Amino acid sequence: MTDDNSTFIREVNEDLRSDYMKALWKRFRFVLLALAIGVVAVTAGLRGWQYWKETTAARSGDVFLAALEKARGGDTDAALAEFQELEQTGYGSYPVLARMRAATVLADKGDTAGAIAAFSEIGKDVSLPVAIRDAARLRAAYLLIDHGSYADVQAEVEVLAVPSNPARHSAREALGIAAYKAGELKQAAQWFGEIDADRQTPNGVRTRASLMLEMIAAKGGAS
Image 1 (cartoon, one colour):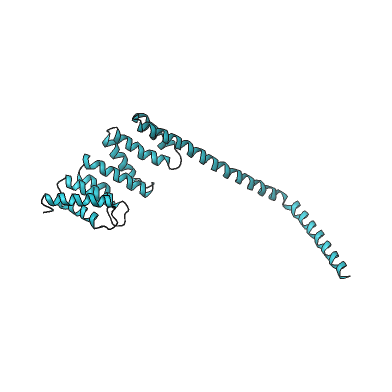
Image 2 (cartoon, one colour):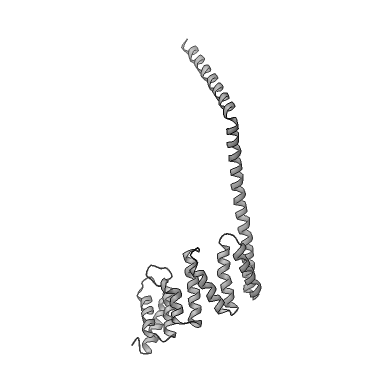
């Protein structure tokens, strides 16, 4: 008898659930259909967006590599044009990379002033990653060693020559060389001394700093 009652109750519950689901579907079927269609549309949209990003980035990469090959082959005018075009139309990180390479091509073409201006502009663009800005500042500074003043080099990289900055070693070296060329031996000795005292200075930079300190000492030191 108990089994019969359990079976009866189960069947009643199943009927009730069935009636409830039918009523629910009848009442909310359009909402449920809209939600289902929305999920499908969003999924398709995300996949389409991902595909577009991948193909667009790939095209930008192809243009970037082609411009690099032209630059290496000596066709600097064509390379520069492609890099500058990629700055405007590229996708992902390629516009920034193209901007840096365009400045390098300007230097290779002998347009040092244009290259310095381009690197300096990149270094001041706060919309770019810090590492890119610091690299651009360093490139401008090293060009300014031969084509500018010690003050010009200071304006570019003195802000990087602080203990917490990963680019401090190169920044100090650029400042030291510029000071030495300007005859500012005391200032040069200070920068090369900071390089030598920094335990994290790369060996190559430290070796060059030691040589410069010896040259400064041979000229009478910082007196």
